[in-house]
Every structure is written in C-alpha cells, then in structure tokens.
Image (cartoon, rainbow, N blue to C red; front, side, top):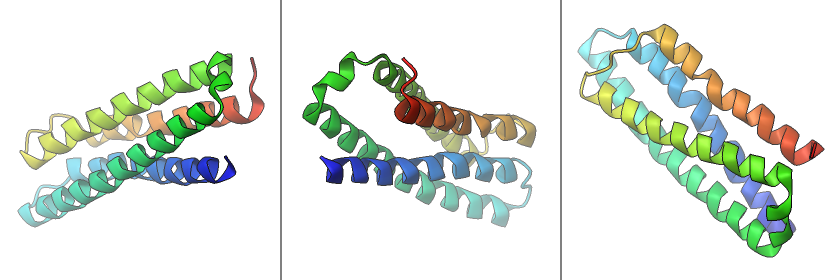
Length: 138
C-alpha cells in the first residue's frame, strides 16, 4: 500500500510540475513574433505535453489502485471533493492540449496576460487537494 501511495505522489508531483510549466511556456509563446522562436516553443510545448500526459496517467493509475486497496476512501467527503478537483485538472489538461494545438497552427487569440491568469488554476487546485488529503476537513 505504501509503495502505491508513494508512486501516486511521485506522479502527482510530476504532473503538477508540467501543469504549472506548460502555461508558463504559453505566456512567453504568446509574445513571440519570430519564426525560430515560434518553432522552438512548439517543440518544447509538444514534448512537455507528452511528459505531462504520462505523469497524469501515472497519477491516475496509482490513485485508482489506492482506491481499489482502500475502497472506504470513496465514502469520505474529502475524497469525493478531491476526485471532483481531479476532474477539473483533467479538463485543464485537455484544454492545455487545445491551446497547444492553436499555438502550433498559429491560431492563438489570447494575450500573455490571459496565460498568466490561466497559469494560476493548477496552483489553486494543488493547494486545495493537499489540504483535503492532509487535513481531511470533513
């Protein structure tokens, strides 16, 4: 059980690192005008998104494995809320994919300011999830 939790945490940390960094790349990409810079960001975003997806899948697999080992967690209000926030992270992840594609096709319509705000969402979700898991306020 502890190994499963440990790998869940490792993948969660990796996923969040990418969820926080990819939108930061979008901030800089939104201000890039030259072709070489654009091409560089497209490559960086694509590679980071692949790693982000692997980390997200790993976090999901080990999280589900934990729930299979301790199904009573599902009866806890903190876990139900954590799973709802997890679904928001998955939606955020998918939207990052959409935005990455728009950048690659040179169809981005948002400014660097939008991406600066967009970049705050996973940090807020991280804070909420950690508090739910550690404090278990319900």
